[in-house]
Amino acid sequence: MIKVITSGMYTSIQDNGRFGYRDIGVPISGAMDANSATLANILVGNISTAAVLECTVTGASLLFKKEVKIAITGGNCDAYVDKKQISFNTVISIPEGSTLTLGRITKGLRTYIAVRGGIASEVILGSRCQYKGITSEEKIKKGTILPIASEVSENLDTSIDITHSTLLEAGIISVYRGPEFEELIPSSQKKISEADFIITSESNRMATFLKSNFSFSAPEIITSPVQPGTVQLTPSGQFIVLMRDAQTTGGYARILQLSEIAICHLAQVRPGKSITFKLLE
Image (cartoon, rainbow, N blue to C red; front, side, top):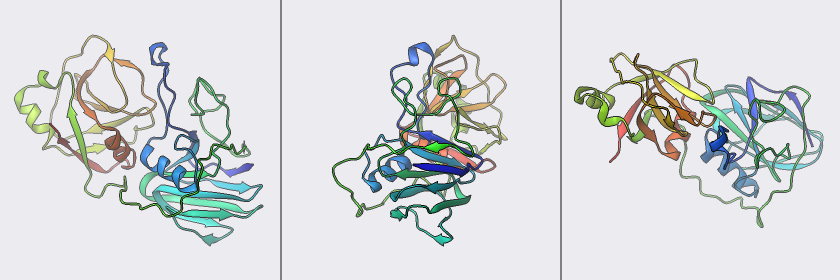
């Protein structure tokens, strides 16, 4: 098992999501950067849907009560096992009684820790994802005990070719036109691909909030289905990109839609950084 010594700013248990309950208003949840979480699981030989730890802004400090294998992926930070620095994107053996310590994330925003076997937290509505109002806790905290599951695949693959990173350099987010895109006036449609958008500090697991020097606006719509990656535009000009913990319906114009990998990209962009949208056909 694992004991949480310090939990960092916001560290939660996430798997691939909670599916089949959107009709009663339950969000999907799941790892914000699903690409990095899946990579961590594959590295340690877990099934790709095993539960991992998602650290935001700062990492956690964890005491391992048994010898295990782990992998760390996603946002870059200093990582140590008993004061010995370790690497990302590879399998690390943690001796029994050792402490893993992750520092502040300096590149990207979210770091993932996979433990061979996965985290054996409570399963609610088919998922281990922590979410306020569904699970007993919305994040881990100091003193939390994390049992280890046995959700492994047949082989431990330590030779994976890591060819893709979700840490953006240029800040370009690929998007598709949403259902209400054509409701925008032509000049606004053009400006969407030209404008720089700054991620604001209000952003969280539910939504990423954007501001721009350009003026945009769209009328409200009849409450309609939304999903992670939907980009809403309010009548006042606020851009809202719905993320993993987003609601299931909304009344703002759905002008754009991010792909799955674009959600992963955006999940790693820090508040205060700028992005641009690249429209795909």
